[in-house]
Image: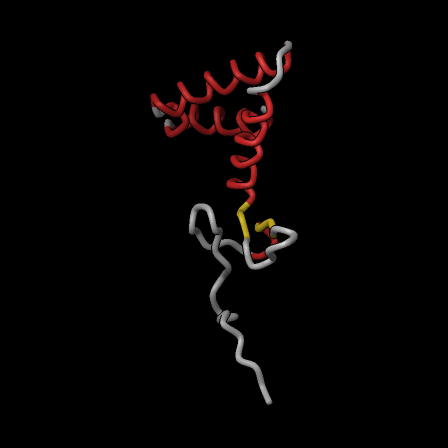
Length: 99
């Protein structure tokens, strides 16, 4: 008896968040649900959202500083500065290093 797999090995796995195809090395699998793969960019986004939720119930310098960074990030995205040539590349590079 043989078992047929649902996955076609010729197709790259897709991110469950953004739907883009990525090689397996660029996906993070969920422990209890290994069928769920999230790309590294979406995993970073999810981490930021989780941190924001935690910071809602905290006070102090750290949460305020992260909230300020998030506000600047939202302004940059709203104005489309992250899509502008060299400036956009620089802003995206900085963003990868921020909490």
